[in-house]
Length: 79
Image (cartoon, rainbow, N blue to C red; front, side):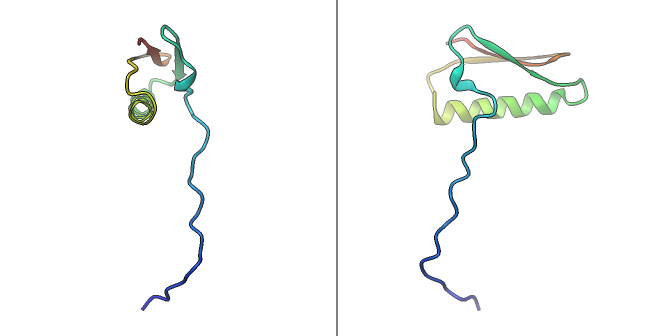
């Protein structure tokens, strides 16, 4: 059986700084997330997932494009 405790505060919400800085981009701006050929698929997936999460929680009316090349993943804000 577990002991029930009262007045134990929950941990603070884990909210760190923005990793990619989507909120700083204006329409027409872009940035490159560097990646090697070996890690390109993983990096592209992470960037796209972070972008989807950012749009869902902060800026649903914005539009973005991503493209992977040999240098990394480029992200554009298009609207």
